[in-house]
Amino acid sequence: MNQPLNGKIALVTGGTTGIGLASAQELAAQGAQVFITGRRQQELDAAVATIGAAATGIRADASLLTDLDEVYSHIARQAGRLDILFANAGGGDMQALGAITEEHFDRIFATNVRGVLFTVQKALPLLSDSASVILTASTTSIQGTAGFSVYSASKAAVRNFARSWALDLKGRGIRVNVVSPGPVRTPGLGGLVSEEQRQGLFDALSAQVPLGRLGEPQEIGKVVAFLASDAASFINASEMFVDGGMAQV
Image (cartoon, rainbow, N blue to C red; front, side):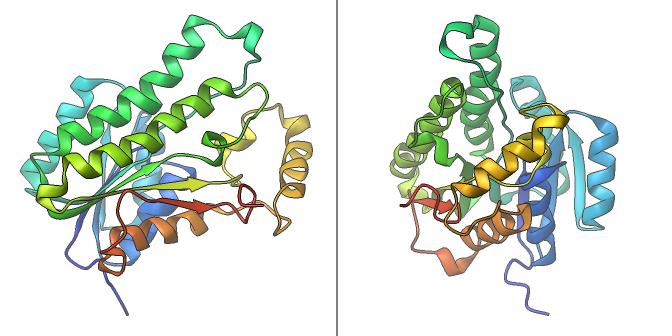
């Protein structure tokens, strides 16, 4: 079996569900030893069981710096280094401009921006030279989306992080790239609306995608694994859209 990531050590934050879980599964299938984080122990345990023996779960909230310190202390003790960092933890919900609250803004930026920043910063002592850092952004960062402005702005910030950090880290040969999914069939996407409205949301989003369907988490996971591999060794500071063409036409 071809395992291009054999021997690599990876961390996936927000790895218990959706894109994070699918990416952790793909990294493990390609040979990596994978650490995943999640806020809820039951979901974390279930994800580790799904991924298999190559996975280790660490309960952590990526928006809390003390939790991140514990994550990296654990990885330092068990593996000694990191070759792949997928800073994926994030999320958001919808609020029209007139309804945005301080709590809404702070909660989304705490995870999607502050959390990503310190997830990467605190990993620096463990990252091997020529490591791959991958950030999760979104097509919303380049598109206007009614009721989704705070989330969209947070993902635009993530996109610029990659541009700037690629320069900060060029002396170590560390690549920093962004994967920007379109609408993907995940619990997070479905959770934006009530259960009764869910299929209507999925149908409306599918109609905006040239391929005529939602993406699946496994499709994003394969792109994450590609960016983590030596096959992407000359890809840096780039944004990889995995959106079925939604934001490209």
